Image (tube, rainbow, N blue to C red; front, side, top):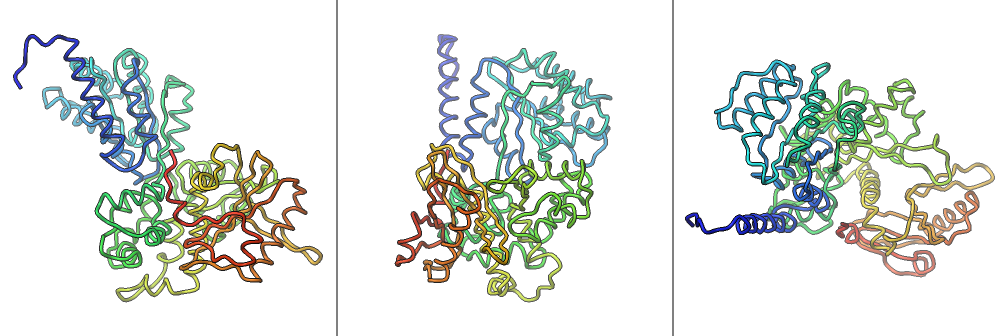
Length: 507
């Protein structure tokens, strides 16, 4: 449609606002899968009257870049991704090349000699842009650009404090080295102190998002198949892209992890060095945690990993937690020093249990491995691990989302005079109730027999005796296909959940 000179400025602004709202609606509903809370934060940054600095943090392959590009699209005036293991000189040359690309080669491409000069060039370029519509500057893989003594953070501080903060602009900084991002940027004590206006921790897909992601790719699995895939690959979008329709979960896992040149056969060897300096320390901790399904104390990790129990171990544990590979939790009623650390990255555990060091032959490796006792043991733990990753969904299914609660575990070592007991997940609620949660991975409906019933009674008895709690205790059973009712289940189980409850949407 030709330009109409009779259009008023107000009319033009109204059209622009309508287009923005249409785009916002499309993004929030149809353009890509999940990430509703994260998308809302990014879109809000476009609507505020002031400049925003948004930090997006998340592990490698989790979809940070895709999220930002999908939401902001042509609002991105300048984008650069740092070069891994590159020198300051190469990073600055990359900056110049990306700036030349953004300016359609009308901007000088001579590489700057410092990051102060680089950001001064960026300011000059952005001054030529129409900032009446909020624009985005996207700095991806920030830790790779900020090499040792490079002055990058000083340059970024200069860019933000001297110019960007006074403009109509969103600066998005992004990095896979989560701990570095938090220590050096979010908690910066210098020129970037308290400059982050919004922060996003991008986690792997939930089961709900995984199901939607596969359906969007025209892959329609039942939920038992998705559970099997999730236990091996987790909710990492980059891994889920490898799944093919028309093949079972067993066939897909075999193709992705075991055949010659399989995409994830050696991903473990690349994963940690891409995120951490001196990654052998992080890998040592991961290997130690893989030996104990239900977690290790700090002292036990030091013993098994060969690392000294001090500042270095603290830093490694913190970095692995921030990156989402491990979790820590305090057993019920225990002090801080009794905190347990647990390997919660599905792929890492799967790799160490079934791929590394194994001599597999034939075309149906995973079909054969999935019939072994090791598989049965692993699958029980992996399903339990998945439940721990979906506690908000469990609370929703129990109808307690609005009740303040704390999740933990319980372990009491037995002796000659008293029985021991272990409860891997319990929810201590503020309404005078504690849910003791049992998790069972089974390929059909589960039935509680006499022996299992006695085991549950023992757990309840030991828990009450040791903790001296006066709260009401309710047993909850989470299983794949549900519970076969009988006298034992009617006596002991207050509520049963199935794998379907883990697929609910929580936002």
